[in-house]
Length: 314
Image (tube, rainbow, N blue to C red; front, side):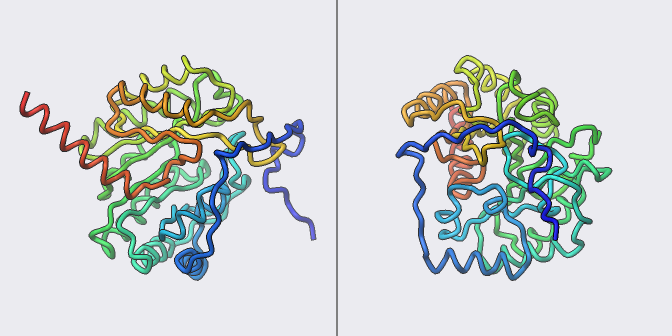
């Protein structure tokens, strides 16, 4: 039996030794009942989570709190981003029962907030936007009290297909900018920096009530001035929430990690981002797009209300 490589496009890439992690990167392991309950429900419904596929360092903490980020449209991505550990290749057909399975899992886990992400599906005419719509609609029907967050692809060369997602009843629209424009050809070669910015800008223009969100990784070779410029670009697109986390190199064939940022540097970046006017900023070594997403959604609502009240008084 021939075993296909998880990342065939990286087989002939040079070997980049993985740097030893500093003490502040260590994540806690746990064997709680809630962790195994979450794992059981995910497995019984044959669901894919980005927690598993991307080897998230926070999986034990999040699953112990019954938090999981569901990854729809399969486990195989049509892109080949140099930082990502999700499998690449030719995806299988969409699962017509996936919306039902996920809405059922959300109900069993009794989630107050759910995050739905996906692989890139450049093979689909709409990039998967109709499938996103079906999943959101099914979740909302079975779980009317659950807030819904999506983390979407860029829908590059798919026209206005992303608008279908905005027809669904969602609360947070997240699309990660990932890195600074200078590094895009090396780190995110299948995407376009200004295309991602335009997507976020258009989403807010169409639906001002939905919270928009984006994320940055650090340690890829960027500098501080470039990070600040990305912050300014995201605020120009009226993005509400910014996450900043440490890039962790998945294998010796992935993009090399230049360095680990100290927690004090993350705090500095958080303060700078807050001064730009984001409603919320999450910046720490282990911050990921959906890390503490339920708690952050509550903060977003609170901060927006406080901002509105302050503007009304003035």
